Image (tube, rainbow, N blue to C red; front, side, top):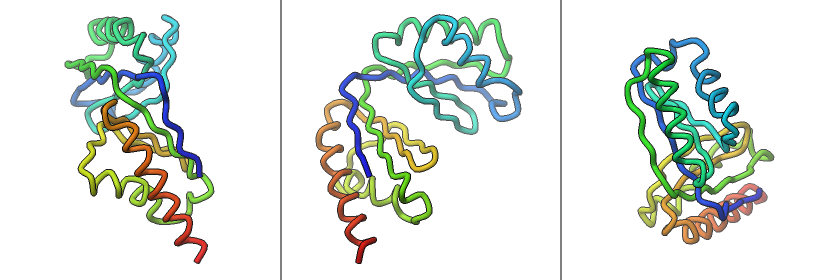
Amino acid sequence: MEVKLFNRPVSLVTVFGEKVRVTPGVLAHFSSSLYKNDVNVYAVSTGEDSITFIVDYVDEEKSFAIMKDVIKNGPTAFNELVLRSNKSLININASEFTDEPGVAAAAIKGLADEKLNIIEMFSSYGNITLILEPETRMRAYELIVSSLQEFEKDKMR
């Protein structure tokens, strides 16, 4: 397992609407607009009524303006846009444990015990991504590494 703490801050641009899941092409609509304007998207998180694009902190204003324009001229399913600036990203590569229950719980157990807030959490085939406040990033990293080392030891017993 590998835990990577990103040094560059990220920002989260979230669009909200009532029909996100039933609006065809909605992800392509937003991501292609960001792509056409040279914005690199680090990750995407979707929910029942929202889509969050994680972008580099230096691109947050540009991204926000692009998304605002897409909402104005695009699918009618969206009605709100929120920017959460200057956040920290931690990525956990646990792909060798994709069939093992409890990996995500083990990774965040220490954060819960110390009441460190996770702003966003999502995964894709063994990769777990966490977005946190910058002031908690180093402690969060230490807790995650420690928790996952313990998880690995338990699996070897």
